[in-house]
Picture 1 (cartoon, rainbow, N blue to C red):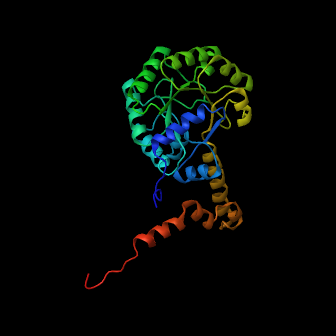
Picture 2: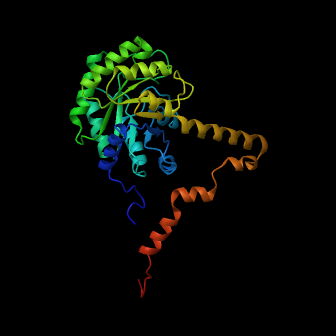
Picture 3: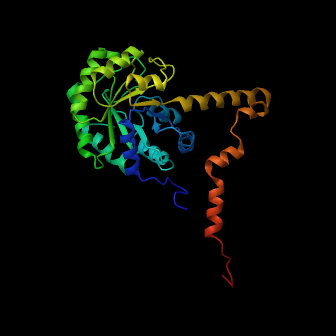
Length: 304
């Protein structure tokens, strides 16, 4: 009955799987999970990994994505998600929650939580959503120190440290490429360039940088929504869908609440809902029942 309440795959093996996936030639698709239950569904459907978005997490707390969440909050939330899936989990660690030493501590905490990798960005702290205007970035050498601290703190060499740059929307793609090269030299395992616009932009970046690349296919942002196969053909190694599940869920929640408010019943929304039986199937209720009857199969006698 191992793995009944938690994932069966050790964290070290998940990290190896993420590394292997990034070098496989097949794009690794990582939808964002807004909670552990979503991660179970991502695994069941057959994706290669799970992503935890800082923007989705802060929105779930009723906060804007401007660096208001803390290291302990993000790691605790992400650890709960990592604990229920056999897939590797990549998380958004913002700017590392402070100075370079804080970035180092972030890596240690993420490793302890069973997470497979994280990305650190070169925005000024506190940051803002990568698809908003008005961002500010730190000098390249400051981000290099941030990355070097993170890399030096890493205990598991398979833990993936991804460097995100927001320079393309501020100083242009060529500046972002130069930063990406410096970040790779500092020890980053993968580069995430935020807010590229077109397939040509993605292809230009791929041609200039020779380590794994991550694409962000978030909705309603600055990037065209490019199919995963096209990104793979361009040469990208991973793609995230950071806020998709939150937007799907909140859209459905809002429609349902409005119908209850207007009609007094949710009857018209039943065909849009996950059924009780499907929820129980996803939660693996049957396995818990087998476990319970197999362990607690005795009766108390006497006067106990």
